[in-house]
Length: 114
Length: 114
Image 1 (cartoon, each protein chain N blue to C red):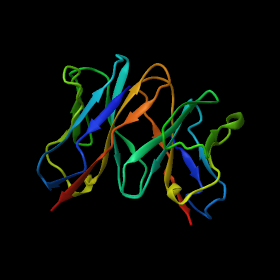
Image 2: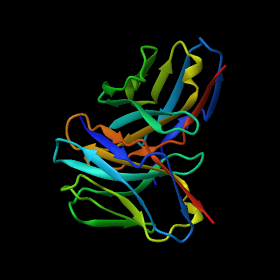
Image 3: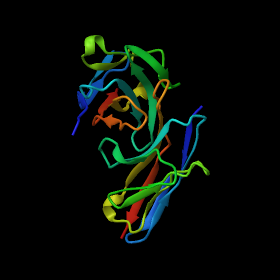
């Protein structure tokens, strides 16, 4: 079945430095879209960015990700993190057919320190 | 933007009692989901629902759990009877059709079973 694997656990980064949160996936389907959701403390997850186009960079709020189907990856990057970026980040995929299941990864907690 | 409303925001219930968590999804959405998040841990898929039917459920969706959306009203998660390990935040989510569509989450219902 479909699966999403993320960098495990906690990633701690000093403010102003770059970060990359890994996301790889497995799916047998071609009609699939990919997402990054962010969940701040005591809030609901919300969409950060999405893509379904191979090798096209997508950006939002200073974060960017490029879908690479050749390596089954959709890593999230930011060139200079801020304290306010501390949150839980989920990578997800969604099929466009069948039961439209939304598959989330386990989540990666990003902690930005001064 | 579109909002998913969850009622109540907090619920405290005695172990063994029944509880119903209510979700008012975005009005034209077709797919509905429940996720469970234990404090400090990742969000985990429980069930997805479409056209009046459960499409898929996880191992966390025990026999004591049920979902329904009678006549297009609230999408509900019922737990009967409740157990201590059911204490968690339950997030409802909904989406429209298509692989590239965003899932919208409610703010969650914090369920405490005592």
